[in-house]
Image (cartoon, rainbow, N blue to C red):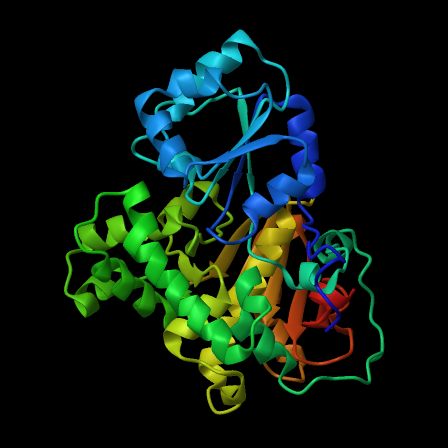
Amino acid sequence: MESMQSDDGYIYRHITPELNKALADTPVVCLLGPRQCGKSTLARHCQPDRSYITLDDRNYLELATQDPEGLLEALPDQVTIDEIQRAPELTLAIKRSVDRDRQAGRFLLTGSANLLQLPRLADSLAGRMECLYLQPLTEAEKEGAPGDFLRYWLAGELKPELPSRNDREPLAVPNRLVVGGYPEACFRQPQRARRWQRQYLQSIIERDIHDVAEVKDGKDVSQLLEYLANQTASLLNISATANALGHVRKTIDRYLEILERLFLIRRLPAWHSNRGKRLVKTPKIHLCDTGLAAALSDLRPEQWNPERKRFGHLLESFVVQQFVAMGHWTEVEPRFWHYRDKDQVEVDLVIEAGNQLWGVEVKAAASVSAKDGKGLQRLAQVAGSHFQGGLVLYDGEAVLPIDRELNILAAPLHKLWHL
Protein backbone atom coordinates (compact mmCIF):
# COMPACT_ATOMS: atom_id res chain seq x y z
CA MET A 1 0.00 0.00 0.00
CA GLU A 2 1.30 3.46 -0.86
CA SER A 3 1.61 6.16 1.76
CA MET A 4 -1.72 7.55 2.90
CA GLN A 5 -0.22 10.89 3.93
CA SER A 6 1.00 13.96 2.12
CA ASP A 7 4.36 15.46 2.99
CA ASP A 8 2.81 17.37 5.89
CA GLY A 9 1.08 14.22 7.20
CA TYR A 10 -2.42 15.16 6.04
CA ILE A 11 -4.71 12.61 4.39
CA TYR A 12 -7.01 14.21 1.83
CA ARG A 13 -10.69 13.60 2.63
CA HIS A 14 -13.06 13.21 -0.28
CA ILE A 15 -15.84 15.14 1.42
CA THR A 16 -13.70 18.32 1.30
CA PRO A 17 -15.37 19.81 -1.82
CA GLU A 18 -18.82 19.36 -0.24
CA LEU A 19 -17.60 21.03 2.95
CA ASN A 20 -16.25 23.99 0.98
CA LYS A 21 -19.53 24.35 -0.91
CA ALA A 22 -21.51 24.37 2.33
CA LEU A 23 -19.25 26.99 3.94
CA ALA A 24 -19.67 29.19 0.85
CA ASP A 25 -23.46 29.53 1.16
CA THR A 26 -24.60 28.42 4.64
CA PRO A 27 -24.19 30.33 7.95
CA VAL A 28 -23.68 27.22 10.09
CA VAL A 29 -22.03 24.02 8.87
CA CYS A 30 -21.83 21.02 11.19
CA LEU A 31 -19.32 18.26 10.48
CA LEU A 32 -20.43 15.13 12.30
CA GLY A 33 -18.73 11.77 12.78
CA PRO A 34 -17.22 9.47 15.39
CA ARG A 35 -14.50 10.78 17.66
CA GLN A 36 -10.98 10.42 16.21
CA CYS A 37 -12.17 9.98 12.61
CA GLY A 38 -10.45 13.21 11.48
CA LYS A 39 -13.07 15.97 11.84
CA SER A 40 -10.84 18.50 13.61
CA THR A 41 -7.96 17.84 11.20
CA LEU A 42 -10.24 18.32 8.19
CA ALA A 43 -11.73 21.51 9.64
CA ARG A 44 -8.29 23.01 10.22
CA HIS A 45 -6.97 22.07 6.76
CA CYS A 46 -10.11 23.20 4.96
CA GLN A 47 -9.78 26.80 6.19
CA PRO A 48 -6.49 27.13 8.08
CA ASP A 49 -6.96 30.85 8.82
CA ARG A 50 -10.25 30.30 10.63
CA SER A 51 -10.21 30.73 14.41
CA TYR A 52 -10.60 27.51 16.38
CA ILE A 53 -11.79 26.55 19.86
CA THR A 54 -12.63 23.15 21.31
CA LEU A 55 -15.18 22.38 23.99
CA ASP A 56 -12.84 19.66 25.21
CA ASP A 57 -11.12 22.65 26.85
CA ARG A 58 -12.75 23.03 30.26
CA ASN A 59 -12.56 26.84 30.15
CA TYR A 60 -14.44 27.09 26.87
CA LEU A 61 -16.91 24.43 27.98
CA GLU A 62 -17.78 26.36 31.16
CA LEU A 63 -18.29 29.55 29.17
CA ALA A 64 -20.43 27.72 26.61
CA THR A 65 -22.75 26.35 29.29
CA GLN A 66 -22.81 29.34 31.67
CA ASP A 67 -22.58 32.33 29.33
CA PRO A 68 -23.10 31.19 25.72
CA GLU A 69 -23.98 34.68 24.45
CA GLY A 70 -20.85 36.13 26.04
CA LEU A 71 -18.66 33.40 24.53
CA LEU A 72 -19.95 34.04 21.01
CA GLU A 73 -19.56 37.81 21.33
CA ALA A 74 -15.88 37.32 22.19
CA LEU A 75 -15.22 35.12 19.14
CA PRO A 76 -14.20 36.31 15.64
CA ASP A 77 -16.71 36.49 12.80
CA GLN A 78 -15.71 33.07 11.46
CA VAL A 79 -14.87 30.33 13.93
CA THR A 80 -14.67 26.57 14.26
CA ILE A 81 -16.21 25.17 17.46
CA ASP A 82 -15.02 21.62 18.04
CA GLU A 83 -17.02 18.93 19.92
CA ILE A 84 -20.30 20.87 19.97
CA GLN A 85 -22.13 17.87 21.49
CA ARG A 86 -20.50 18.74 24.83
CA ALA A 87 -22.63 21.91 25.04
CA PRO A 88 -25.64 21.53 22.73
CA GLU A 89 -27.28 24.42 24.61
CA LEU A 90 -24.91 26.69 22.69
CA THR A 91 -26.98 26.22 19.54
CA LEU A 92 -29.65 28.67 20.74
CA ALA A 93 -27.05 31.42 21.12
CA ILE A 94 -25.66 30.51 17.67
CA LYS A 95 -29.16 30.86 16.21
CA ARG A 96 -29.55 34.34 17.65
CA SER A 97 -26.13 35.37 16.41
CA VAL A 98 -26.85 34.07 12.91
CA ASP A 99 -30.23 35.80 12.80
CA ARG A 100 -28.40 39.09 13.41
CA ASP A 101 -25.77 38.32 10.75
CA ARG A 102 -26.46 35.56 8.20
CA GLN A 103 -23.18 35.71 6.29
CA ALA A 104 -22.07 32.33 4.95
CA GLY A 105 -19.52 30.24 6.80
CA ARG A 106 -19.78 31.99 10.16
CA PHE A 107 -19.76 28.84 12.26
CA LEU A 108 -18.12 25.53 11.47
CA LEU A 109 -19.16 23.07 14.18
CA THR A 110 -17.83 19.57 14.66
CA GLY A 111 -19.51 16.89 16.73
CA SER A 112 -18.68 13.35 17.80
CA ALA A 113 -22.35 12.58 18.30
CA ASN A 114 -25.35 13.12 16.06
CA LEU A 115 -26.29 16.65 17.07
CA LEU A 116 -29.86 16.39 15.83
CA GLN A 117 -30.57 13.42 18.13
CA LEU A 118 -29.29 14.94 21.36
CA PRO A 119 -31.94 15.37 24.08
CA ARG A 120 -30.34 18.62 25.32
CA LEU A 121 -30.29 20.28 21.90
CA ALA A 122 -31.54 23.85 22.40
CA ASP A 123 -32.35 24.49 18.74
CA SER A 124 -32.09 22.47 15.54
CA LEU A 125 -30.90 25.53 13.56
CA ALA A 126 -33.29 24.47 10.81
CA GLY A 127 -32.79 26.56 7.69
CA ARG A 128 -29.52 27.92 9.04
CA MET A 129 -27.35 24.79 9.26
CA GLU A 130 -26.17 22.07 6.91
CA CYS A 131 -24.89 18.80 8.38
CA LEU A 132 -22.15 16.80 6.68
CA TYR A 133 -21.05 13.37 7.85
CA LEU A 134 -17.41 12.33 7.96
CA GLN A 135 -16.77 8.60 8.14
CA PRO A 136 -13.53 6.91 9.23
CA LEU A 137 -11.02 6.69 6.38
CA THR A 138 -12.22 4.80 3.33
CA GLU A 139 -9.82 2.46 1.55
CA ALA A 140 -9.72 4.89 -1.39
CA GLU A 141 -8.66 7.71 0.93
CA LYS A 142 -5.94 5.51 2.41
CA GLU A 143 -4.66 4.80 -1.11
CA GLY A 144 -4.85 8.42 -2.23
CA ALA A 145 -7.31 7.29 -4.94
CA PRO A 146 -10.21 9.44 -6.23
CA GLY A 147 -12.94 7.41 -4.49
CA ASP A 148 -15.17 7.48 -7.58
CA PHE A 149 -16.20 3.83 -7.70
CA LEU A 150 -19.84 4.46 -6.75
CA ARG A 151 -20.29 7.24 -9.29
CA TYR A 152 -18.42 5.21 -11.93
CA TRP A 153 -20.55 2.12 -11.42
CA LEU A 154 -23.92 3.90 -11.19
CA ALA A 155 -23.09 5.71 -14.43
CA GLY A 156 -22.72 2.33 -16.15
CA GLU A 157 -18.99 2.72 -16.79
CA LEU A 158 -17.89 -0.54 -15.15
CA LYS A 159 -17.32 -3.11 -17.90
CA PRO A 160 -16.09 -6.74 -18.01
CA GLU A 161 -12.31 -7.00 -18.07
CA LEU A 162 -9.63 -9.63 -17.61
CA PRO A 163 -7.41 -9.70 -14.51
CA SER A 164 -4.91 -6.86 -14.54
CA ARG A 165 -3.04 -7.28 -11.26
CA ASN A 166 -0.13 -9.62 -10.65
CA ASP A 167 0.84 -8.24 -7.24
CA ARG A 168 -1.82 -9.85 -5.10
CA GLU A 169 -0.99 -9.43 -1.41
CA PRO A 170 -1.53 -12.40 0.92
CA LEU A 171 -4.43 -11.70 3.28
CA ALA A 172 -4.89 -8.25 1.71
CA VAL A 173 -8.63 -8.10 2.35
CA PRO A 174 -8.66 -9.48 5.93
CA ASN A 175 -5.83 -7.09 6.83
CA ARG A 176 -7.94 -4.16 5.66
CA LEU A 177 -10.96 -5.40 7.59
CA VAL A 178 -9.03 -5.75 10.84
CA VAL A 179 -7.31 -2.36 10.57
CA GLY A 180 -10.51 -0.42 9.94
CA GLY A 181 -10.64 3.27 9.13
CA TYR A 182 -9.54 5.22 12.19
CA PRO A 183 -6.32 7.11 11.33
CA GLU A 184 -4.64 6.27 14.63
CA ALA A 185 -5.13 2.54 14.03
CA CYS A 186 -4.00 2.72 10.39
CA PHE A 187 -0.51 3.92 11.27
CA ARG A 188 0.26 1.33 13.95
CA GLN A 189 1.53 -2.21 13.91
CA PRO A 190 -1.34 -4.74 14.21
CA GLN A 191 -0.91 -5.44 17.92
CA ARG A 192 -0.59 -1.74 18.73
CA ALA A 193 -3.60 -0.93 16.53
CA ARG A 194 -5.74 -3.44 18.41
CA ARG A 195 -4.66 -1.99 21.73
CA TRP A 196 -5.63 1.49 20.50
CA GLN A 197 -9.02 0.25 19.27
CA ARG A 198 -9.88 -1.32 22.61
CA GLN A 199 -8.81 1.72 24.60
CA TYR A 200 -10.70 3.96 22.19
CA LEU A 201 -13.91 2.05 22.89
CA GLN A 202 -13.26 2.14 26.62
CA SER A 203 -12.84 5.92 26.45
CA ILE A 204 -16.05 6.33 24.45
CA ILE A 205 -18.05 4.30 26.98
CA GLU A 206 -16.52 5.96 30.03
CA ARG A 207 -16.62 9.54 28.77
CA ASP A 208 -18.48 10.38 25.56
CA ILE A 209 -21.56 8.36 26.34
CA HIS A 210 -22.48 10.86 29.06
CA ASP A 211 -22.60 13.67 26.47
CA VAL A 212 -25.50 12.00 24.67
CA ALA A 213 -27.54 10.28 27.40
CA GLU A 214 -27.88 9.65 31.10
CA VAL A 215 -26.47 6.19 31.69
CA LYS A 216 -25.73 4.90 35.18
CA ASP A 217 -23.36 2.15 34.11
CA GLY A 218 -21.66 2.23 30.73
CA LYS A 219 -20.68 -1.42 31.12
CA ASP A 220 -24.15 -2.48 29.95
CA VAL A 221 -23.75 -0.43 26.75
CA SER A 222 -20.25 -1.86 26.29
CA GLN A 223 -21.63 -5.39 26.66
CA LEU A 224 -24.27 -4.68 24.02
CA LEU A 225 -21.64 -3.33 21.61
CA GLU A 226 -19.52 -6.45 22.03
CA TYR A 227 -22.59 -8.63 21.42
CA LEU A 228 -23.41 -6.66 18.25
CA ALA A 229 -19.82 -6.99 17.01
CA ASN A 230 -20.41 -10.72 16.84
CA GLN A 231 -23.77 -10.14 15.12
CA THR A 232 -22.68 -7.55 12.57
CA ALA A 233 -24.39 -7.84 9.17
CA SER A 234 -27.22 -9.87 10.74
CA LEU A 235 -30.90 -9.12 11.09
CA LEU A 236 -31.52 -7.16 14.27
CA ASN A 237 -33.62 -9.16 16.71
CA ILE A 238 -34.11 -6.84 19.68
CA SER A 239 -36.06 -9.38 21.75
CA ALA A 240 -33.38 -12.05 21.34
CA THR A 241 -30.69 -9.50 22.15
CA ALA A 242 -32.54 -8.42 25.28
CA ASN A 243 -32.89 -12.05 26.42
CA ALA A 244 -29.22 -12.79 25.72
CA LEU A 245 -28.05 -9.81 27.76
CA GLY A 246 -30.65 -10.00 30.53
CA HIS A 247 -32.36 -6.69 29.80
CA VAL A 248 -35.87 -5.68 28.82
CA ARG A 249 -36.52 -4.69 25.20
CA LYS A 250 -36.99 -1.02 26.12
CA THR A 251 -33.49 -0.86 27.59
CA ILE A 252 -31.90 -2.42 24.50
CA ASP A 253 -33.80 0.05 22.30
CA ARG A 254 -32.37 2.92 24.32
CA TYR A 255 -28.83 1.58 24.23
CA LEU A 256 -29.05 1.08 20.46
CA GLU A 257 -30.04 4.72 20.06
CA ILE A 258 -27.02 5.77 22.15
CA LEU A 259 -24.63 3.71 20.02
CA GLU A 260 -26.15 5.20 16.87
CA ARG A 261 -25.74 8.73 18.21
CA LEU A 262 -22.05 8.00 18.72
CA PHE A 263 -21.71 6.66 15.14
CA LEU A 264 -20.61 3.22 16.35
CA ILE A 265 -23.44 1.19 14.79
CA ARG A 266 -25.71 1.53 11.79
CA ARG A 267 -29.20 0.11 11.36
CA LEU A 268 -29.66 -0.66 7.66
CA PRO A 269 -33.41 -0.65 6.90
CA ALA A 270 -35.14 -3.22 4.72
CA TRP A 271 -36.16 -2.29 1.20
CA HIS A 272 -39.63 -3.11 -0.06
CA SER A 273 -41.31 -2.23 -3.34
CA ASN A 274 -44.19 -0.79 -1.29
CA ARG A 275 -42.68 2.23 0.45
CA GLY A 276 -45.24 2.07 3.26
CA LYS A 277 -44.06 -1.41 4.24
CA ARG A 278 -40.38 -0.50 4.52
CA LEU A 279 -40.85 0.97 7.97
CA VAL A 280 -42.05 -2.26 9.53
CA LYS A 281 -39.56 -4.74 8.11
CA THR A 282 -36.52 -5.90 10.10
CA PRO A 283 -33.30 -3.88 9.70
CA LYS A 284 -29.80 -5.29 9.64
CA ILE A 285 -27.26 -4.20 12.22
CA HIS A 286 -23.75 -3.17 11.19
CA LEU A 287 -20.82 -1.94 13.21
CA CYS A 288 -19.61 1.11 11.31
CA ASP A 289 -15.90 0.31 11.61
CA THR A 290 -14.73 -3.24 11.02
CA GLY A 291 -11.50 -2.59 12.92
CA LEU A 292 -13.50 -1.99 16.09
CA ALA A 293 -15.73 -4.99 15.31
CA ALA A 294 -12.69 -7.23 14.81
CA ALA A 295 -11.15 -6.02 18.07
CA LEU A 296 -14.36 -6.76 19.99
CA SER A 297 -14.85 -10.18 18.40
CA ASP A 298 -11.12 -11.02 18.50
CA LEU A 299 -10.75 -11.71 14.78
CA ARG A 300 -7.27 -11.65 13.23
CA PRO A 301 -6.21 -11.75 9.56
CA GLU A 302 -4.68 -15.23 9.82
CA GLN A 303 -8.13 -16.60 10.74
CA TRP A 304 -9.51 -15.65 7.29
CA ASN A 305 -9.91 -19.28 6.18
CA PRO A 306 -10.90 -21.13 9.39
CA GLU A 307 -13.29 -18.31 10.39
CA ARG A 308 -14.62 -17.61 6.91
CA LYS A 309 -18.27 -17.29 8.00
CA ARG A 310 -17.47 -14.70 10.67
CA PHE A 311 -15.19 -12.85 8.28
CA GLY A 312 -17.97 -12.94 5.70
CA HIS A 313 -20.19 -10.90 8.02
CA LEU A 314 -17.33 -8.51 8.74
CA LEU A 315 -16.70 -8.14 5.01
CA GLU A 316 -20.34 -7.26 4.38
CA SER A 317 -20.21 -4.51 7.02
CA PHE A 318 -16.96 -3.28 5.47
CA VAL A 319 -18.52 -2.96 2.01
CA VAL A 320 -21.61 -1.24 3.36
CA GLN A 321 -19.38 1.29 5.14
CA GLN A 322 -17.35 1.99 1.97
CA PHE A 323 -20.50 2.66 -0.06
CA VAL A 324 -22.14 4.81 2.63
CA ALA A 325 -18.99 6.93 2.85
CA MET A 326 -18.81 7.31 -0.94
CA GLY A 327 -22.48 8.28 -0.93
CA HIS A 328 -21.66 11.40 1.09
CA TRP A 329 -19.63 12.87 -1.78
CA THR A 330 -21.73 11.54 -4.69
CA GLU A 331 -24.11 13.99 -6.34
CA VAL A 332 -27.05 11.56 -6.59
CA GLU A 333 -27.27 11.38 -2.75
CA PRO A 334 -28.21 7.69 -2.62
CA ARG A 335 -30.10 5.95 0.15
CA PHE A 336 -29.11 2.52 1.41
CA TRP A 337 -31.15 -0.55 2.33
CA HIS A 338 -30.95 -4.34 2.42
CA TYR A 339 -33.37 -6.81 0.84
CA ARG A 340 -34.82 -10.03 2.21
CA ASP A 341 -38.09 -11.70 1.16
CA LYS A 342 -40.33 -14.41 2.54
CA ASP A 343 -38.24 -17.04 0.72
CA GLN A 344 -35.15 -15.72 2.57
CA VAL A 345 -33.61 -14.57 -0.68
CA GLU A 346 -31.31 -11.69 0.22
CA VAL A 347 -29.32 -8.81 -1.22
CA ASP A 348 -26.70 -7.35 1.10
CA LEU A 349 -27.02 -3.74 -0.03
CA VAL A 350 -29.69 -1.94 -2.03
CA ILE A 351 -28.81 1.51 -3.37
CA GLU A 352 -31.63 3.85 -4.29
CA ALA A 353 -31.34 7.21 -6.04
CA GLY A 354 -34.60 8.80 -7.09
CA ASN A 355 -36.63 6.01 -8.70
CA GLN A 356 -33.56 4.02 -9.74
CA LEU A 357 -32.27 0.97 -7.91
CA TRP A 358 -29.06 -1.07 -7.77
CA GLY A 359 -28.07 -4.08 -5.69
CA VAL A 360 -24.77 -5.30 -4.23
CA GLU A 361 -23.89 -8.80 -3.03
CA VAL A 362 -20.69 -9.46 -1.09
CA LYS A 363 -18.73 -12.71 -1.30
CA ALA A 364 -15.57 -13.63 0.61
CA ALA A 365 -14.70 -16.29 -2.00
CA ALA A 366 -12.07 -15.84 -4.73
CA SER A 367 -14.42 -17.13 -7.44
CA VAL A 368 -18.01 -16.50 -8.50
CA SER A 369 -20.69 -18.38 -10.43
CA ALA A 370 -24.07 -17.60 -11.96
CA LYS A 371 -25.88 -18.68 -8.77
CA ASP A 372 -24.26 -15.78 -6.89
CA GLY A 373 -26.59 -13.47 -8.81
CA LYS A 374 -29.76 -15.16 -7.53
CA GLY A 375 -30.59 -12.48 -4.97
CA LEU A 376 -29.94 -9.68 -7.44
CA GLN A 377 -32.15 -11.35 -10.02
CA ARG A 378 -34.97 -11.58 -7.47
CA LEU A 379 -34.50 -7.92 -6.57
CA ALA A 380 -34.67 -7.04 -10.28
CA GLN A 381 -37.91 -9.01 -10.60
CA VAL A 382 -39.49 -7.18 -7.67
CA ALA A 383 -38.18 -3.72 -8.61
CA GLY A 384 -39.12 -4.02 -12.28
CA SER A 385 -38.09 -1.13 -14.49
CA HIS A 386 -36.53 0.69 -11.53
CA PHE A 387 -33.70 -1.87 -11.38
CA GLN A 388 -30.59 -0.54 -13.09
CA GLY A 389 -28.00 -3.20 -12.35
CA GLY A 390 -26.31 -5.40 -9.80
CA LEU A 391 -22.85 -6.12 -8.53
CA VAL A 392 -21.28 -9.15 -6.88
CA LEU A 393 -18.10 -8.07 -5.09
CA TYR A 394 -15.70 -10.95 -4.53
CA ASP A 395 -12.06 -11.60 -3.59
CA GLY A 396 -10.90 -12.21 -7.16
CA GLU A 397 -9.30 -10.24 -9.98
CA ALA A 398 -11.56 -10.14 -13.07
CA VAL A 399 -14.72 -8.15 -13.84
CA LEU A 400 -17.14 -10.77 -15.16
CA PRO A 401 -20.69 -10.70 -16.55
CA ILE A 402 -23.20 -12.71 -14.51
CA ASP A 403 -26.44 -11.62 -16.21
CA ARG A 404 -25.98 -9.40 -19.25
CA GLU A 405 -29.70 -8.77 -19.70
CA LEU A 406 -30.06 -7.40 -16.15
CA ASN A 407 -26.64 -5.71 -16.16
CA ILE A 408 -25.31 -7.79 -13.26
CA LEU A 409 -21.52 -7.98 -12.98
CA ALA A 410 -19.01 -9.56 -10.64
CA ALA A 411 -16.10 -7.31 -9.67
CA PRO A 412 -13.04 -7.59 -7.42
CA LEU A 413 -13.31 -6.01 -4.00
CA HIS A 414 -10.16 -4.02 -4.68
CA LYS A 415 -12.03 -2.04 -7.35
CA LEU A 416 -13.57 -0.09 -4.44
CA TRP A 417 -10.21 1.58 -3.90
CA HIS A 418 -7.98 0.76 -6.90
CA LEU A 419 -10.32 1.88 -9.70
